[in-house]
Length: 378
Image (cartoon, rainbow, N blue to C red; front, top):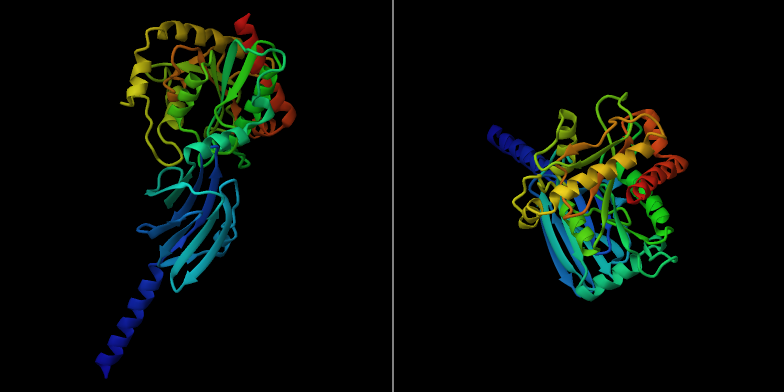
């Protein structure tokens, strides 16, 4: 009798342990870009899943799973690729059926936690077919990206890079503001000013809340034959008292100060999915850039451009650094053209965070960068 009771108790704890071992679906996030839609699910380690694709729909099945109530509310996302989402539960298996507008290439993979994300992640990408991608890019273009009305052939193309985006929020402010939203807003305002100027045209590396890899931002500049590259950021540090703008140019040897090296590491090492993109990358494309014969002239011109921007930023308030600094930012390795990274202010400073979220102040920042560009060309 005692043995039977012991066996029943053992079975009870075994079944309880099995129930507790279910994979919790902690969060769902969706990101849309002109090229793809990305689904990110925060999960526990060892998630078991499968994908079944049938023409204009696909089913994501996750076995032995537990769906949180708050997570369920985030499932029903629609965009230019996802028409409708339905959820069906079969015992402990959840099936997420996505009805699509067209047929897409679907890729999936898992990622381990890192400094930014404490959960394991299941990532599903919906990539456009070639003809669909062209249509999506055309459809997604905003008026500020059109050619200037004042001239049919813009001689100066300025590549404006809004830092971070999508799964990479960038720095987080004292009141939880996200760097990625502020940089995009300032970038769009700057683009509008440039496009209203005769003989100049602005191109944005991203037009919405989605991630563009660091090396792809470089390729966008090259594809558009850009004559300048300006990357916009808003840094955060532990001290709330740090304040002021600064401008960085490329150093192939790495940051010239401890602060520059810390900033360089935060910008270069990890994208939103933990892919390492250090400045000493063995990527063949970047190595060619490093050995570009005109890099010396690019460095000189980048310093001049940075100084002109700082002269204008100084009119808005104190500078963090009065002269352009050097750091090994991957995104600045744009071949043969002047390239700068502008840290507009410290989002970790409550006063500067408030400024960065102000539409009026964003316009002032955009105008300062714009005037710096104009003065550089003069």
